[in-house]
Amino acid sequence: MTAQDKITETVKSNDVVLYMKGTKDAPQCGFSQRVAGVLNFMGVDFADVNVLSDEEIRQGIKDYSDWPTIPQLYVKGEFVGGCDIITEMTLSGELDTLFEENGVTYDKDAAEKIREANA
Image (cartoon, rainbow, N blue to C red; front, top):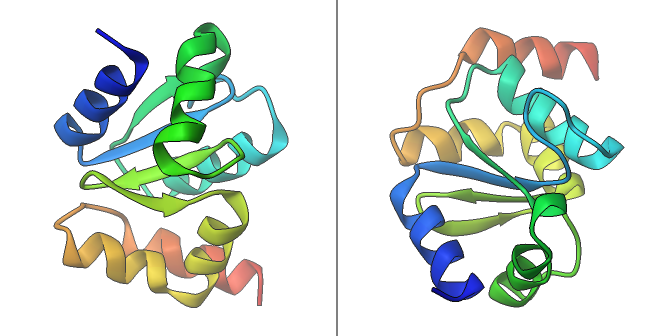
């Protein structure tokens, strides 16, 4: 199975997937920590893929999305964005809308707390 096949299988079989450096419990870079932190705080059930543990996946995810950086968030098989985009979407409420439209469970109060803390 190629890296592309593994990535396709992972993003199609999980509602929310974060390709990151480290794991959701132990991120190994600030950008991955920020996105995982937002998802964890909002109570989103997501699969985490540590790109540091597999060089083929690390390069493969960049090729798959045509996006040069990690982390990368996928919702219902679609690439959403990296750290800056997820941060902007969280603060604007767009991430809430994306989750709602895709039937992803999250804590709306927690999302509001993030926005209030960054207002």
